[in-house]
Image (cartoon, rainbow, N blue to C red; front, top):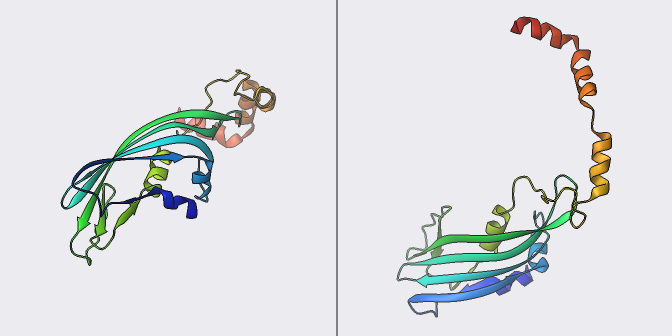
Length: 179
């Protein structure tokens, strides 16, 4: 967690208005998160912080690429991301009240800085597609052709699938009910 210290923004000394911050995200960043979906990547994070009397608005713009494993051929491939997100931070005058929500983070007045590493990590993780495909099946640059051939070799033929379905007598009984 030591390397995540660089993602702290001290906001107490900032004047009211807009301030800009830039951070670099690389493999060391992702290594700090134990069960991260992303292990490698090179990204640039630009944060525009608008400080007001009782709150701060953070506008995140994250660009770059992350390395993902293709769900089809298991080969690593680069995936380009461009993320634009917003986070609201409320400065709470009453130290007893904490009512964080997904869109609003509440900070006590005694806090002097905010660590945006977790927010950056969450935004990047949410950008990872549910089904990860290199999109280049058969392209020798990214797709693992040997793995594709092995999968095709081991896949059952349509005839084998039909035979498996007919092998179970319970299906015949269910088909009679359907008619």
